[in-house]
Image (cartoon, rainbow, N blue to C red; front, side):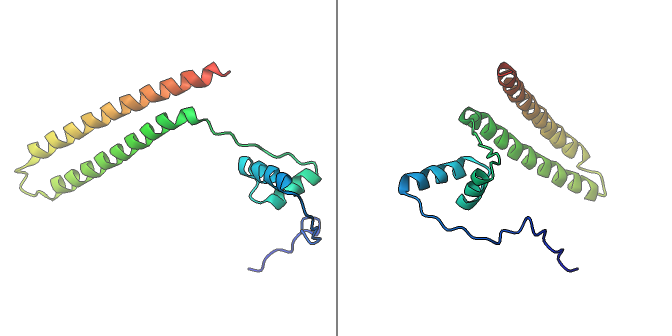
Length: 135
């Protein structure tokens, strides 16, 4: 399928070459790093056309809860894998000789899942309290 022809108004076909001093370059580069722009040329185009530049802000106070939630997510994934392996072993046990063993193992794993979910809910409630303080 051929590519659609570009809108002539959207094509960047007229190059403008300018030189700036080091302080202006640093200001533009800092703006690029803090914004949703990917290049300094994009920053300059937005300034020249009076378009908004969205500045991005990272709240470092959220690092610890996010790391903790990522760790809990990893642990929950590992528990899920263990449950799947035990379920497969249970289903392959034709004689049914070890069924109580599998039931007890899965019950223990589900208990760990419950503990992890409780800790996730505690973290989320703290984050919600912090979020609501700002509004």
